[in-house]
Length: 180
Image (cartoon, rainbow, N blue to C red; front, side, top):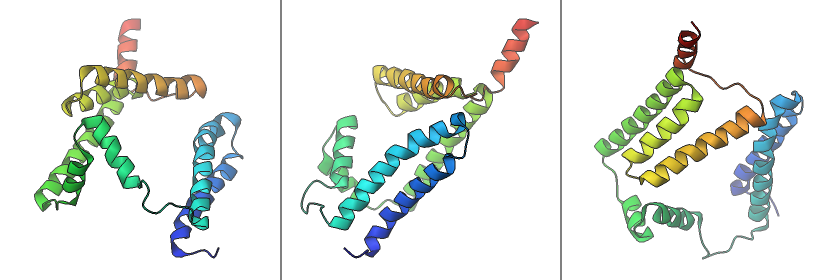
C-alpha cells in the first residue's frame, strides 16, 4: 500500500477539507456553520475516495464516472448516451469553442448584473427561469427549479445562518420611495 502518483490528488482533497474544518473551528458559531455543513460531507467523501484508490478496490469494467454522467445527461435532455459519447469525441472547431466561451461569459455577466441590481433573492429565480427557458426546458421544470433553488438558498442562508444577503440597488430604492 505504497502511495502512488494517482493517490496524491485524493490525499490533497482530504487534507484540504480537514484543514478547512480545522480553520473554521476558530470562527464564531454562526461563521463556522456553513464551512462545517459543506466540508464535513466533502471530507467524508474524500476519505472514502482515498481509501478506495489506496486499496485498489475499484472494479474494472464496471460503471465509470463517464457512464454515470452520460446517463444523467440522457435522463435530463433525452437521447442516447452513445450519441453524447460520439459528440464528445468529435473535435470542436475553434469558432465553436470561442462561441461557447462567450456564451458562458455572457451568462456570468447577466447573473452578476442581476445580483448587483436586484440582489440575490431576486436574481436567483429570474436567472434560473431565464436560463432554463432559453435552454428549452419545460415551463414546469423551469418554474419548479427556480422556486426550489430560491427556497433552498433562503432557508440555508437567511433562516439557517441568519445571514444578510445582498439586496441589490433596486430594493433599497423602492423601499425608500414607499416610505416617503
